Image 1 (tube, rainbow, N blue to C red):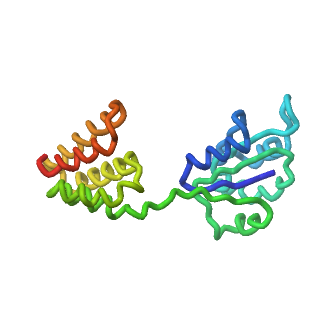
Image 2 (image 1 turned 90 degrees about the horizontal axis):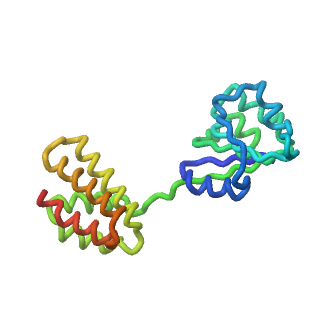
Length: 201
């Protein structure tokens, strides 16, 4: 059986792959495969078992072999093709979409994304106001994800203007990162403390 997993949520996809294939499975990189490898890959037996568990990364990205997949749909093995991107306009997808399972693993979009960036921008001038804004979304946010978005905004600021305040913000965020990983303090308390200090850096 062949299944195609695709999308940018690699953590969820890998969890599902482990559920289906188990912990011991063969792994191949599609771009390195040639058409001569396919018969042994999809139809060959192993020494220990007739049925093999196989993961192939980015098989469909290899245009020289992608269209040959139809020749191996009756494989006796449990095969998952893990594609980072999938072109649904391709002839291969259109030919296979009704014959094998395609499952998407997309990262969930954060509805508070713009507000997170607004909180960082506000904290640069008014930490207390930033904390008021944070209190509205804090119950539905993960502190580590929120911290990651703060870092991305600080890096963006630094790329636009490499000033002293931007450098200090990045240094403070690197300290915050260490504290978040090594202390028993509540993550939100550390993040809130950073937001309060940001305007005075």
